[in-house]
Image (cartoon, rainbow, N blue to C red; front, side, top):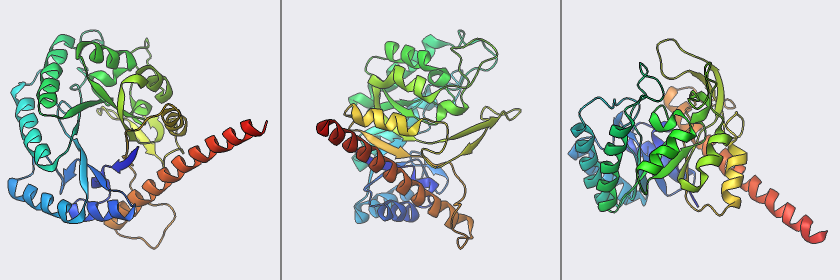
Length: 307
């Protein structure tokens, strides 16, 4: 097991991202944006600088948090756009020695019914992307977000059935704000635990996010959510982490706070300071959650031996 995170939630630039990672005592970053641009789209000059700074710091990129087939990409758009991004990502990942990339399954077609989502075209595209990455020695992992596979656990299982070998990056918090298309109208939001227990055997990587659903935002695919520290929301974070560790999970946990402020330190004033401090605090709280889970298991084991 190892810990990592979307360090662009600590700082926009690579220097701050490295510093936050080292302050937590971690060695990895799940790279997404650097100065506001995804790592597979930054200039070659900037990428060279990033590589040098990572090497000097002894910090590695364990996963590319790519934009490939994410909720901003439509299945009706030309596929060559996804292929071009994948080729750039592969070249850069090979230079960095990164072996995992987060992908999705294109945005939900809101004007269509749940059973009319151009499934076969999605499956075809993901099979081709999957093959590209695997042939390059890279593991693509699908995240359940506002995309086809995130419509409910049955949709994720259809992806796995039709894209042989596909593994999952399970986001604990995403079900909280995702409509459950496995249910009839009026459709509720999903249950993180329910989603997790059905896809558990296919999980290769975990995103840690937590919060509470508040309400829909007219005209937006993303509703209003109050994001919280891990274990303080409705994402069943503690329960899922415990079950994973009890089951021998040895993959990564990647924090993705989505929180904009630190609640306990009034001395921190600037937006950049708040962002950085919140990320570090989130990481520390998640490490404490893991420690608590382990201690609980140890106490239970000792009690059993005593009995």
